[in-house]
Length: 150
Image (cartoon, rainbow, N blue to C red; front, side, top):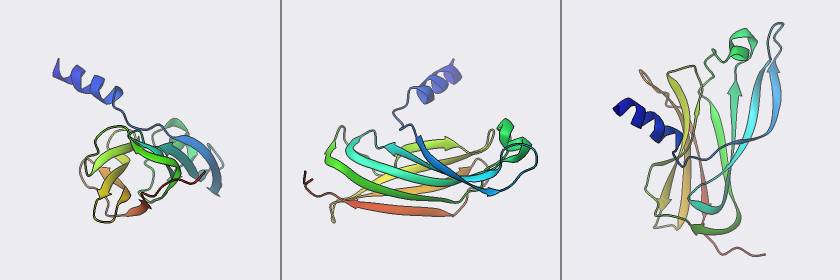
């Protein structure tokens, strides 16, 4: 019963959904899709006026086409103010904003948010983790909270 509750909680979580903006091919594959870099955008579900852009590698080939390949841990992130910033809910430091599976079972890429109150800035960190061993590779971006000019 507890497992069902955890699955339902994961499905109903308020994490952002990514929208694919574009992609470029990096390695030609004879069979299956090419390896590529994809660029995705997602809005912070708790902070109106913020959109994050994430670029990451996607493994192609037969395994990649079937969703069985493990994607690389590298990613880049750039978050921007796209409108007036307002908080929909109270923010928690290190709160997960976006999460995407990068292997069949054990590896995920996630974006977490911090609020630097001293500098009045939102900070977003992207990193990859694995059940057994995570990766220290990461990227960070910051958005100062300033009035929006229309």
